[in-house]
Length: 88
Image (cartoon, rainbow, N blue to C red; front, side, top):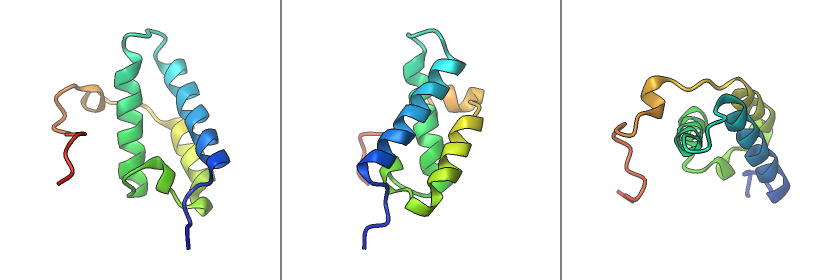
């Protein structure tokens, strides 16, 4: 049984993430770092490989998490050691 978010719920999370990034970082050139950091943070917090896999019963917790998320200097670092292209 699929317990992940449906398309509408996924879009709701995406909009929430975008709103948070734009609130925190008005500089368009810096925003990609914020998007990478927040998506990475969500995946760690909810133990998923994609935000789409967040369980439906956790959507409100995920929204609250995003609304309160604050980046750290480490999370915005380009050299965090995270390799996005690797499938190991």
